[in-house]
Length: 207
Length: 231
Image 1: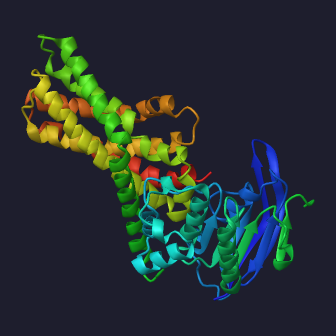
Image 2: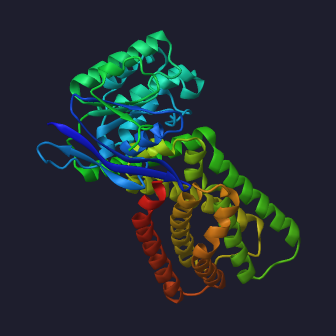
Image 3: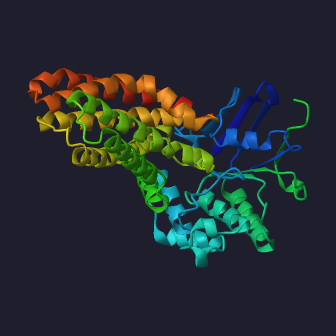
């Protein structure tokens, strides 16, 4: 199973203002894509379009398997971590992950969910309502939320925001694992590890 | 996580889980239930005080019952989508479930809510407004049941539309009124027939209209909802 995510001529217009245009790229399994650009250049908008939660004004995003097998809905293949993503804060951490599985129409095993909560260092707080979490803990929960269905494509928008040292290390581990087994797309202004990415899209570059 | 089940089973599980999520959330926050119950209690109290010892005719009381039901629905049924937008969880829901499953789950939640509230409204109405006597229970039962389903179906799709707007509170009844008017007029007529003691055969036209209304609204909603839901 070799996956390809292709973007062709993406353009987004908000209130007659062109955010970006002519964005095209192809990213395949075991490749990483870095999306950069100034504040307001449309990084989060592009992430939402790739995540299939926002429609582009022009252009298409296509997910393919090398075997030409039907991939179905793109959202089934994608895990998304974004500042815009909010969890159901009246539910506990464990309930949120159960909900994420159930709303995707999947069955879940308590052991898998507990393992994921241990991975993001929230196992001890699994029965606490998410509203009682700090911003950093909520960011960790978003990683558990994004990984609960083991997505082949992981999209991270500002991946380390609000995280402490332990959290940043956790993100690096998750990114390394994803690099080895699927597609990783990161939108950030932090260019410290820019050389580790296979592809780069700069939204401020002329397209 | 295993993906071995058929898409239909996954779709059903997704829709049911959205309904359960909304229901558990409602039981913990009680936003919609509180708004609906308080509206019904307040309105019926005002009607009781306004009428005093006077007795209104059956057709007037039939109409007033649906006025209470309409505005109670307007005060609470939009919550299902508005809360998702206000709390920023709409994107989360878009990421987790297909538009069809979201609509079906939300419709199921509004249906349970509106049937429960309508039963409560009818109970209070019958107890406190002595002039309101139902002579043909079967007509009344089917009118309330079909009216509730039609009300839930229309309210759900309109809630999906207005959740994206800035003036949600005022837009909801304004947009709902023309769409719900045929349903309300038919329900008022059905309730009047039940209060007058008509035979059930006389209300068949009302029932046929209500069933057609429900089928048209649900079919149109499932086709249109994807375009409403996704920006």
